[in-house]
Amino acid sequence: MGILLSIHILAGTIALLCAALAISSEKGKKFHVISGRTYFWSMVGIFLTAIPMSIINSNLFLFLIAIFSFYLAFAGVRFAKNRKSI
Image (cartoon, rainbow, N blue to C red; front, side, top):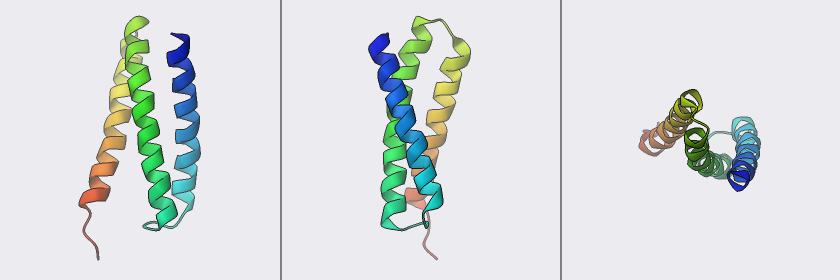
């Protein structure tokens, strides 16, 4: 469980930093896109560690939070890929 928690904390830290960078950069620029992609893959890491940890600890609430958070990150990627240019 310690390795899962360590990976989870590292991925969470990266996600927080990348979210701040993506929000503060100009939308559509290369830096924004790279920050957003890194954020998404960090969220994947968080999800992949949160699911087994919530099952091991029998915590349904955190299990559902992990699924919902991943859904929001995945939906953001889908919206970004399917957006129409003006």
